[in-house]
Length: 147
Image (cartoon, rainbow, N blue to C red; front, top):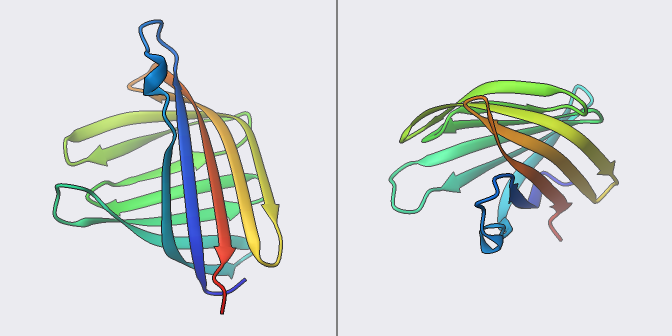
């Protein structure tokens, strides 16, 4: 895979409360240029995120292994989220508005790697401050930029 890649991340949250509206379950998608490298049998993707209405950025590092996905954020938000099938991982999530205790219970995770792209699918339950908030899906596609 080339150093310069195009990253597409889409996420969908299914609210678990009975009061959730169906139209709240809209997918969120980000498509951005990113940098890719492979080191110590792991795939890394680096990209920056701009937050509307705020000065500053969020630097993101995604580390992908066969059985583990890690998302590390620094800048306006700081966290180190870990997704491992059939495991609950808890982390602090610092935002400009305060800190949250975030738990991810990964129900399923699939990683498909080929020469020109990487596809990642994660299904997990999201807890915030020890309360289950939503069932979530992340779909991540990393593909080499055409030369």
